[in-house]
Image (tube, rainbow, N blue to C red):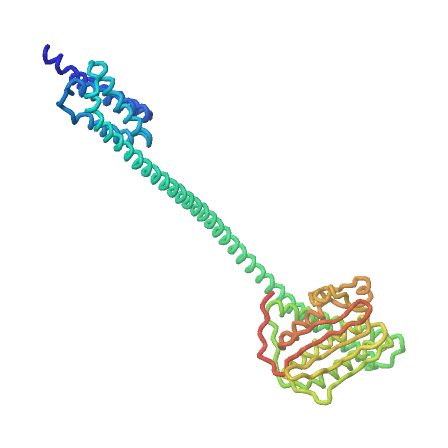
Length: 423
């Protein structure tokens, strides 16, 4: 009984400490960490004060108040940055309360507590600063971690978007390959059809034209004027149909990438004169003057004579088609590195907004006027392809009601022709 009376605070600590620890563990399992830490810390703080007050005597166990520093440091680590200072306040008040309850509160005993209280205050301040720096570092690390996670999320989403784009691009490439293959097959089919059509139509058309010419010349006997007129119309229509057929076949070969020219030294004067003489027959029934402006010396260029003449005839024929009266001129200008064939006329002219459109296939700008004239809309586009195959260029200067000026520029020293890409 004497031992129990003497050591009752120790026995209370032996019982109360496990109980408070068990309760704190239960609260901790319920995710109430703050309450569990307070219960465990302040229960043991009170138990330590009881034990210290029982054994603390004047001149004995004077080191016990310094042990409050352990609680101060632990509270700062377990709770928050201010917990160390709050624990210091309790470590200063609880001994005074114990001395008061045991009738030992006097100046000498308070003086003995003063060094420990001061040291514990310094320790609480250091704990505050350390925990503050620690929390600040944790906050910085947390911010950096959040930013890193945000970057990872952004990279993940970007990677997903890139993967989706790649899949989409791969799908589009596959579809484009299919479309290109289909277009090539259709182009080859169209080219074969045009070649077959050309072969099947040219033979009877040539027969019609030749027989009409023979009949018109009286090869089978004399004819009256009406019969000659009809036969000449048949012959002209046949030649026109052959020209249309040739244009269609040439465009089909160009689109298929099979169109080729054969360059050789060419007499440019002969080509210009033949073209002008051919145009003469198209304007016999109209008051149109043919004008020539030739240089004193003609250069010899590398060209395909038949194709160059075809390009020039198409441009001259276009001028004859849209000129009712006035003039059609051919001017040849020779420079150091190129020669220009300039076809001018006093026809209806072309709106500047349509200067590029006239070089597109099957384009006839003035539909009202076009109905009065025959044509497929392939002459100028074909001429552009032919001139480009010679390494040159063609462009137009014109305005509505002011005639037109077509310039065919050809290099004097021609490079090797590049094959046209398939359309």
